[in-house]
Image (cartoon, rainbow, N blue to C red):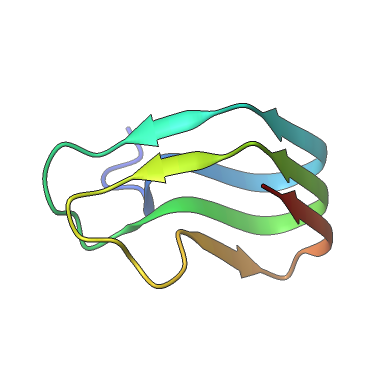
Length: 73
């Protein structure tokens, strides 16, 4: 229906007040896409996010036209 999405984990678009707590994403094989993509999102909180990839990407989260972003380990 959507063809290939821009993220291998979560693709969040046109949303407000998104909260991720203690989420673990595991990619079994190398993927050129990032794990999380937030597009036009207002208010994102990521606490305890654990991304496991065969080849660690520089930044597993990509933001486009988004604001109010809080990332805690």
